[in-house]
Structure formats: structure tokens, C-alpha cells
Image (cartoon, rainbow, N blue to C red):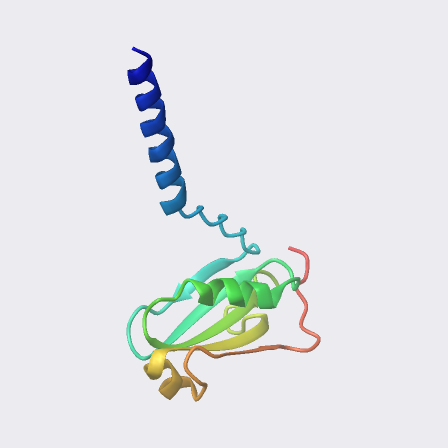
Length: 130
């Protein structure tokens, strides 16, 4: 009986050690991005436009980075960040613009290197209270 218990314990310890060695830890969940809402997103073509609305001018670059991080299709992406307030039916309240070149087609479309981004805020742009 003692031999069986010892053998079972050795087998269990060996399996546990092998499992631990072959297991990679789960990556931490990605941090939640800044608050924004995608109001328009092209899903076809080599040049795609994405319009985003925010309620504040805070962390606009983080908004842009979060939006482009999820883009998978090879294309040139143009991201426009607008304030959710202060615009009109004919003119939005543009806070920032950015481009992202995903793959060779994205590079050809945007003029950026593959995988590169370009981001600019509009100086003096504000997001008035709703």
C-alpha cells in the first residue's frame, strides 16, 4: 500500500512539474481605454475613415492609440476625433486628426511607413459642456 501511495505521489509531482514548465502565464488584460464613441467607420477600400466622438479634450492621443490598436485590415486609416458637443450639422467640433498605415497598402495610401502613425491636435480646440 505504501509503495502505491509513494508512486502516486511521485507521478502527481512529476505531472505538476511538467505542467508548470510548459505553461505560460496569461497576459494581463488590456487596460480599459479612454472614453470615446465611434460614430462612423469605413470597412472597405484602401483609404478608410473613422470618426470618433469624445466628451473631453483629455487624453486624445490615448483615444487615437486605442482606436488604431484594434485595426486589422491592411489599409490607410484616417481618424478624426470630434467633441460630442459644440458642433453643428454642417461643421463638427474637430479636436484632432490622425493617420495609421497598416501594411504596404496603408503605407501607399497615407505616405507613412508601414505600421507608422501620425497624430495632431487642433490648437485651441475645446469641448464645451453639454
